[in-house]
Length: 318
Image 1 (cartoon, one colour):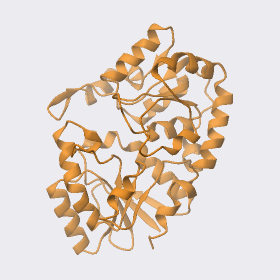
Image 2 (cartoon, helix red, strand yellow):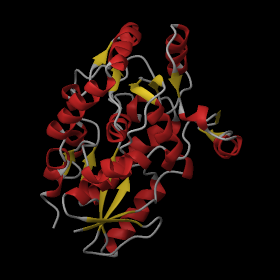
Image 3 (cartoon, one colour):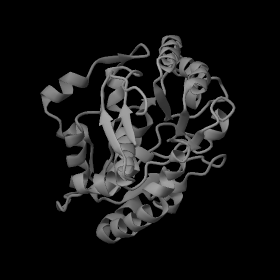
């Protein structure tokens, strides 16, 4: 089957944060024998299946309705969870409340919904019968592209947004004597200038999302990749961050999250520890990082193989 990514939702800056899920899903589909293209704003007609990241507003739902009338098929890929407050992830930002409001209408128009947050498929099934929880699993195709044998020269890497709480945790690790590299540390001034000063929800951002080539260099420089939660009480595992590190060939250490309502399968693959234990546990992993990488990679391939991570979601697509 042919799958085609369609970038009709999110601004350009939002798509920077979605490169990893897009490439991870693409790798798994290729491993399972499918073909995948990235068509930008182009929509493919049937029998191709268009893949669209969630991020709908009223105009987005109207567009989806027009596409269905034109005979186009599409699957919505959901990256967030419904919030009890009426906003995705219980976020205070207005755009997340808008996205939660219009997601059910978009799901009703979709042929299927793939959810990267455990339990989200159950919430969407009343609107789209073919809703499935999926994971960003192992891909041999992706590993061939990313795996490096470079010798790391520092203890930790963190990639992603480092404003707020995460910057505090990184400072604590550095103050304790650990080296922590971020992609921003490796960016040129020109690369920083292209992404700094973007306005999102009325706030000026200093972005840590740059070229994936720079992110991969940062991962390769470190012995351990960190998963740090952005907020206290955070419920989501950083699956995009975890799979990127393991495909590059670096073990992961994750900060504990509150996933009691919908446990993440990543607990079978990487360790989760309390904030106060990050330094000591992380340094122990760094001292034997190759053994930790090999053990985590073996669990990754077993528990989150393409067949287990996404194969079930393909059963209703023909």
